[in-house]
Image 1 (tube, rainbow, N blue to C red):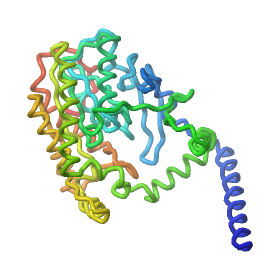
Image 2 (cartoon, helix red, strand yellow; image 1 turned 60 degrees about the vertical axis):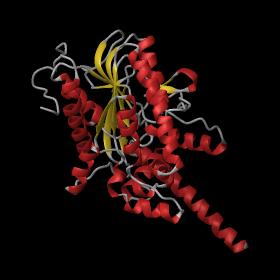
Image 3 (cartoon, one colour; image 1 turned 120 degrees about the vertical axis):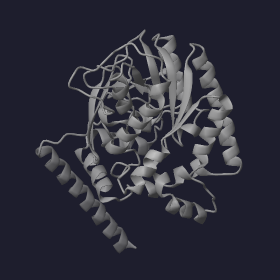
Length: 373
């Protein structure tokens, strides 16, 4: 036992010295602790968070460099803010969603929402994106209420981008602690959480190790991060409860939209892992669970029919990519890659464009066509 303790001590000492040497080496080469998405978030009411106003920030993840820009309302937009929304504006479409709607891992013009907004703007329509990574459906509704009541934004169509996570989250609010650097650190204040926060904000090697693990595939394959996704696809009583809770949420959203004569549309935005569900289904069976990849889609469609709201489905876009053996997600991340995001944005414009009233022209400058052109 004494020999084992000695070996463990030597291993710990060696690891510590190696980390210190690596840290100073990276700093000597000009690296700094990661400033990924520095300043992006701001506190919101009741302990929640939203995107801060007039942000220009970047992130350099294993999937590549991305930029994030927000307008004066804290809505994600293009770098030049040609597509920005201001207090009191009247817009045709407001997108509500989570990280998939926000466009995690890609820049605005390469995101689903950005592609849609550029296509719409090229034909005179105004689309704004209120989606925020980590937001529940309930939190997005609160944000939409804030935009109307405080910022006097008038909306004609609310489009809820329904992921399998969003459909589960109509009854709870998303809370997190916003640090002084405008980044999220969660609500936990324990020793481990504080140590991780310190390492993230003070060590160059933190981001290096994170990216190396993702690039190597260790712990980065979306299909291997399964425990949190099983509940999205459970049948039986869980499916009944899902439909009931989502129906209650859509009723609230529709009532809110009716307050200004707006329409509601539900758009099913599948997880990429739904295209290769066999391994997930087998892993669930090992734990005695029976899951079905169509449960969120069928629930979304049924609730849309129940409340007589628009329903659109982006699953065929993912299936076409999958059938052609095209990559769907970012490296080490289940969020859509650039190509799939743009394709989904274009398809969504094809589906909802004809439903919009004639617009007031707000065209992009010449020489900068939208993705849909």
